[in-house]
Image 1: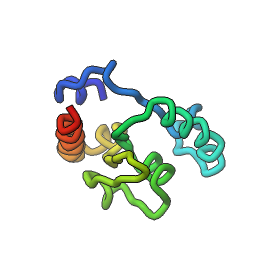
Image 2: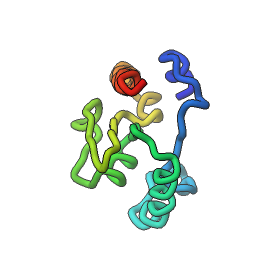
Image 3: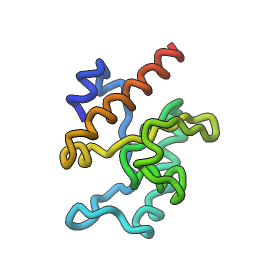
Image 4: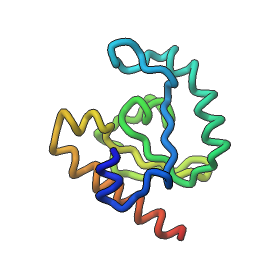
Length: 122
């Protein structure tokens, strides 16, 4: 992530990173439904405090927990979704980039879309 931010001229102190779950599940597996549900109120409060204009959803777990189970990361990545005044950009999770180099191009493209949107606000 840090290298992608650096490549795009994003300073780490300019962003806020939050996770759906606040504890990593055993064996680094995806969180189960009850684990995600147990943490979502905390995440919602973080969003209320930070008041972001844009949220980048990294991977399927974030996408499905925030926007809904009907969303899939492959079909949704790179496409803006707006809800309650917040713009969401779904993209690949950084772990997916390690497994498949071809996804890095999409990831950088998606982050460039975010930067363009941020520049519109400036």
